[in-house]
Image (cartoon, rainbow, N blue to C red; front, side, top):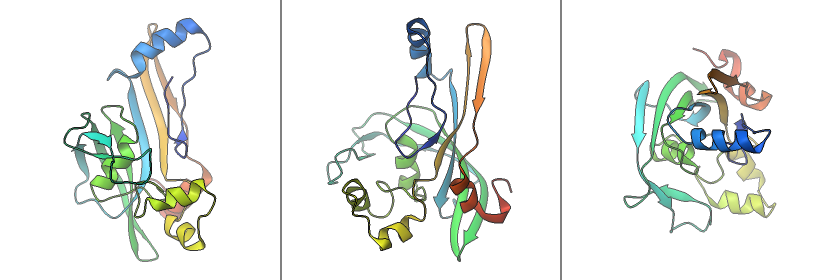
Length: 191
């Protein structure tokens, strides 16, 4: 019923029958469904809480056909961000955050965070060099590419999904994988 990007880990909601699929299909794209994503990003955001409101559309300057970008003529999109922890690895700054998409555009969180100057660790499309994605799909990532990415998959995790349906409150949570948690180091997720 919901979708996540190929390398994003986390919750995927699946309906078991057509009636449930119809009902949930009407609900899933509305603000009535609360979604929370965990992300590890490059750098230290200046504020603990902020919103990114920037319209999204096709990135016509990129060789990557599926890449979108912030565009004035794009579809409205908004993401709310809360910094959980700032930390360093090998003298480089990183932060763990909770990102909440207020709208549901393709690659929204990834684009918004990169636009704010805090690309998600391991992001092959919206990180420092989108040609890494082209090398990835042709199975030709270099040793240097892998070192720069730091993780095999990008560090974005669909952590929680909450909504009211059929007179009941539904709340799903799933922890991230070991590679995500290991990147955080001894301090873990919390401050």
